[in-house]
Length: 329
Image (cartoon, rainbow, N blue to C red; front, side):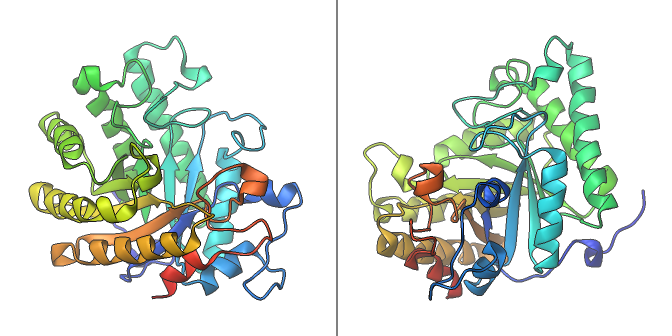
């Protein structure tokens, strides 16, 4: 296998990752949404984010997505185009393989339509060839992602039913085919496995104990942290210490790096979201031995007036809220 230096990772740096998933951006721009900086001047969203201290962009990729404004797009070609934009703005890059034609998360992990009816051996080949195809397209464009997720929020597995946690032996094989394809094209990309509820240590121990037992290969433990989606919508102050303890435990228990790959707070409570982001960054930085890599906001630019999403960090006036100032600290 060809040896790659870290210099071949796009915009690689050892600095703390401060970033965002902004996969909605091409659709927002295509439908005429205008982005303004904090003083009201229209600017490229990338510039606004960079001036807020962000240095990393995360992009989801779907197999054969629809053209739906909010729940489509994110094809291979769109992902490559966005990755190139991120590269030009000097951003580090994370790719998030959902292995679906649309949203994959704890509530749903729907197999791509093109893979329906395939036996398990063929499904393993589907995962490998699709992953390799996207990674090769990025490489051909001169983009070497620093991190790549195999699956998105997979507490119950991915690519149901074959990749359900009801059959860990098969799930581990599917994960490893994704891992192998990534490493074949870009050996220095760090592979992330990602669960929701980053404050729930029992959830993570159970899942990653089984992943380890079944030989699943990975480099980084990725977490989502959304106090808003916890039962009763408790304030972040009631779960932030559990998040810190879980990250410390994961780093020590599995000798892996950890990263908050998704976080978000209520757009209508920017001061509270600001405080949460400051606290989350502090907890990640406190993970021993430098194993806490960074914090990424999920769709901060996805203003509710366009997306109907409650947890952006953008106002209906087209300007970022104070929440994003937390990344300047």
